[in-house]
Image 1 (cartoon, rainbow, N blue to C red):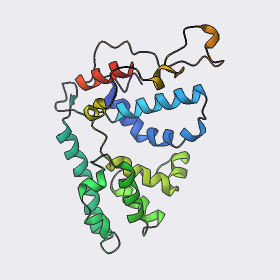
Image 2 (spheres, rainbow, N blue to C red; image 1 turned 30 degrees about the vertical axis):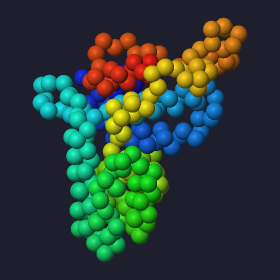
Image 3 (cartoon, rainbow, N blue to C red; image 1 turned 135 degrees about the horizontal axis):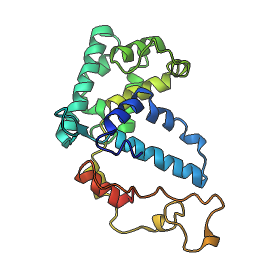
Image 4 (cartoon, rainbow, N blue to C red; image 1 turned 90 degrees about the vertical axis):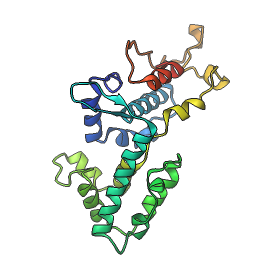
Length: 237
């Protein structure tokens, strides 16, 4: 978590996390965390790592630290990805993937925040492809290596739901952090005040047996951007 939030180390850390499909594999295990305090904290930690992993930054010059991207620059990046995906579909599956080829870029990228609708559309539109054809298409997009040596990853590559999740994760534009901040209440709500995994009780007898508390506040003296600064202060990370 600290590496993914650090401006100098996050480039290598995030590339490694994406190479092993960390966020996708972690999301597939969320259902096994249960409703315990430890499970709740695990999900909170994984969500934080995923958010920092997708934090909009770009390396403009090799000698300088990454700079924050504007919403327009981020949207342009994901639109270019969707365009490349459409070109490959047109080249190799012209007669079967017409819905994908002629779809609007916003629909593929979930630009309006409708990620569920975008995922459902992509999944239904690719139903005509076999698992092998879908895997080859992702290989051509350089999202995975069909000749992977890792047995665990090769097993995952046989799972169609995993392949679809890799594709949607690549195409879908992250939510605008500033727009999300506008929805965060300035003062604590009752839901937060009575959540013992985030705010511990004032008496030791009220603590849960597991004694699992919220994530420690990061003792960082620098932030990725002003948006990151606001996020950490609102969420106490």
